[in-house]
Length: 131
Image (cartoon, rainbow, N blue to C red; front, side, top):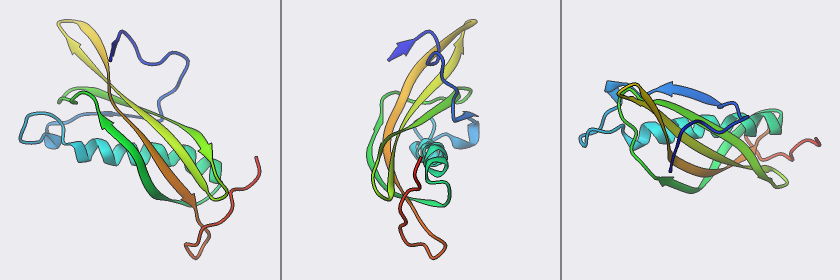
């Protein structure tokens, strides 16, 4: 998906520049680099909703739509889409902004859905606190 700008009215959870050290043998950014930042971005709204410690329980969906390249400014947008008794499901959308010949191109590169579980001090699941 190509568009001329990042999602209007939303603030990215994370913004990271893609660096040469993160390139794979194919010349694009290593998928594991993207995955790790997706997990970090997703954990932020989950932890805020859980009002405390959380762990990643599952990756429900993860799709690499377009590659990320060195020099791209990568923006991660994360928001809660579902709550269970102890779990928080988070949607993460990842956009790359790249400059080509003085024009900023914005591309949806990845989207994912992750499930986090609120845990207590012993690492056991705990109920989410009321809103």
